Image 1 (cartoon, rainbow, N blue to C red):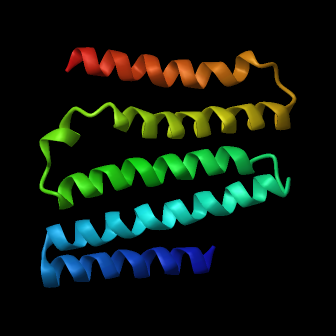
Image 2: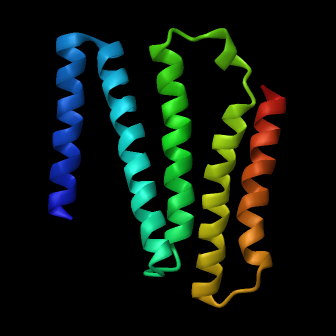
Length: 140
């Protein structure tokens, strides 16, 4: 835990130094670009672990990290490319979000199996999240 906290503090400090030295836009772009590419590498690693049947979480992790890489990369490129019109309303983003959603649902399924619970238990967090998003969106 100490190493993780020290790593977190170091990375936070690095981002703040970049922000102070080069401005928010540079820090934002470096952070989003780097995490998008690292997420893609992590997704590939989990896909490899799934193919080797190393862990039941591997497929969910592969989908989750692929979704993270895609969505973060989308918004990073959207900003780097100066908000191109074609990306403003492109349905391609929904494919990337679907990767992320699939990973989340697979995680709930693995948690359900680990706890020996009925399938209905993994459905309620998904329904709750979607319902809350709908309510907050409509209330905006």
